[in-house]
Length: 168
Image 1 (cartoon, rainbow, N blue to C red):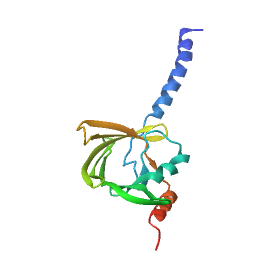
Image 2 (image 1 turned 180 degrees about the vertical axis):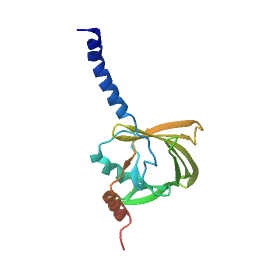
Image 3 (image 1 turned 90 degrees about the vertical axis):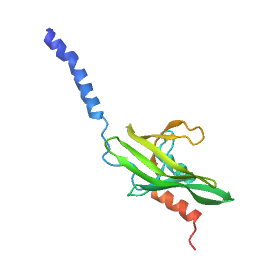
């Protein structure tokens, strides 16, 4: 075999693999990937089949204008739950940075605290990966954590709201 044929034979798999990697390059977000609806933020990748269970404890409702509020679904007695707003604010998405900046108010019992966090969006296989950075209000240290946001099914959110706020 000539050197030229051997080089082509050895180089072909590298070119194919390189093309596959290039086509796998992450597509950039042109708008906020957190769309309107109710979302949960698990810290691990979870199967879509179990998303309903995560939504039962609480979710964040996001609006088209960037506004949001987080609802906790807390037990208050046997078979009863109470919805309470934990956090509210507005997020602004920056497509160039692939990030959003969120400001608002966080509630902890009777106390209210300013919310100021930055979120970096990435794709992780078929999952959306979100790295949130904020200043911890107790330690005053900058902290980051990773979540894998998933949208709650509308049917599940409706059921939660109807159970917590029954029609009169």
